[in-house]
Image 1 (cartoon, helix red, strand yellow):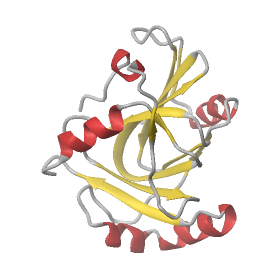
Image 2: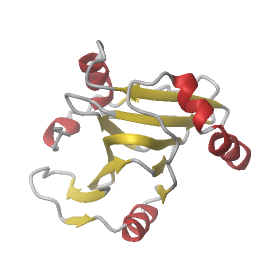
Image 3: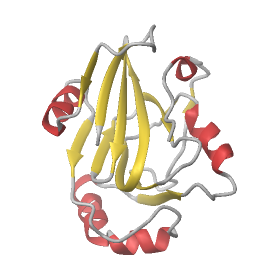
Length: 181
């Protein structure tokens, strides 16, 4: 089940609010400029599937998003617990960073913890199958796939280079909960 928890940016030990209703999640995130939608993610893909299979399964949705929003790059993160670089990848995404463009993720299998640092709040979004989240450019965030990942996410970018991060150097992510499977 998808879940949004909102924290004071200084205190990662107790959320100020928690929400599991998709409409209320969309409203809360929308108030800070973050897009959240529930989509149908019914194509048969599983964590660890190759990107080509995932893109082929969701080609219609990808094409529509590219037409509607001008995204020029698409990639897939598809990891399972047996992935040999899972710890290295987890550490890479756990550091707070920004992008010079919007980042959109559509979770088509499994789950991941997408955390946004906006002003004096931290928005921790447990994304599950069917969640689409769109993070505006310049938004500080990090992502946790857990120690034993099991998810597939399609990412879309307006930058043809795809995922390009600028790390902030802030250790804030270390003060907030991790995804523990």
